[in-house]
Length: 274
Length: 187
Image (cartoon, rainbow over all chains, first blue to last red; front, side, top):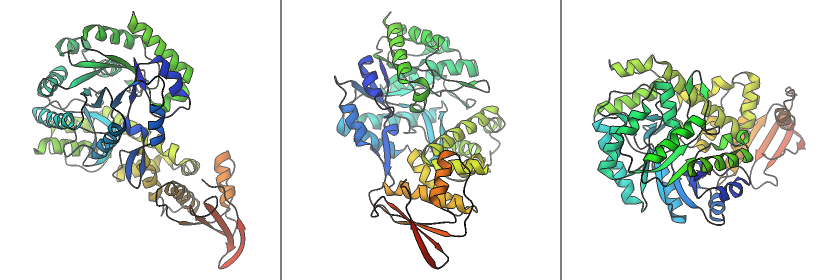
């Protein structure tokens, strides 16, 4: 069991620490810009280091933009370097997406076209990451906000091609799959049947909201029962799954409440232990 | 790099930011340009920008809302500028963009918040901000959602400087004539 730590919510870390085995840390969220360059906030690294007994750490990036045509976000890798200077996480991961184009932020995260051209680009970048950091690297599928671009691969086929070529791991996100099912009529069962589930090491659960009929991947709510049931189904199929992570945004902490977050962690742990 | 992926991503960026773009007859881009999903993505992107600016530029956001310009200013800024993926770089850039705003109070409030952000940098600069009304009263009114003070005929010259005790000092004067010193709470 794991959950998100983005450095906010005074006293939250000591409440959630005893309820999880791993802490998911997004470097982008615990950074501060100093002199035009983003750096990890040392006081938050100290807070992570002070958890007793120590929790295993996993790093989950948001801002690498691994699928940008021109380049990825080098600033994110500097943050990752700083994190590795202080800790050795069990693994690190990033979304299979792009958030910047020609260095300019899109303001959101978009799914990649599933083409041979993108496959070559992604695999080459994953291999560079694998050489740079001494722990496994995982990628996570994201929700599809825009209509799919013309593709050479199915969603599962694209992930299979990446994991086969690079031996990277996978994160499956039950809530993202729920969003795609609701928004696009995505065939989740067909996706799971086609996907090679052996590389799946981590499973995400979360809850969100609907807006104008769209289910959004804004992690602001407890996990819906249907999402949890899907997660349990996925967990039962993945032979190498190591952790289930409940994700929530720091902006949602006031609404969820510390008690609510702790209750949710207990509820998910109970569900996955049965 | 083939042109296809590059052209596709550049076009998506331009569409999200409502910029002029040649879709080159690409059927997918044309479908995208007319889709409700594109509107949703724009809305999500702007929601996040508004949220971030409200969080990091509290006084400026509150004043912009009172003026009825908040949503428009954020949208205009986001669409016209290459924004950083890092939230803490967005706020100062947004405040900087208001330096030449026609509303004098908004200019002063934005420069004050920008100065407070810059104070936290390793080599903080010194700032001189001129107000057309008492900054204490203006900031307190924004804090408490009270009525804003009107220009009072004086000029308030504020210095924001890490070397000053409390980091902020202010002098009230008529044009060309120093009259009084007022203390302003640091940001």
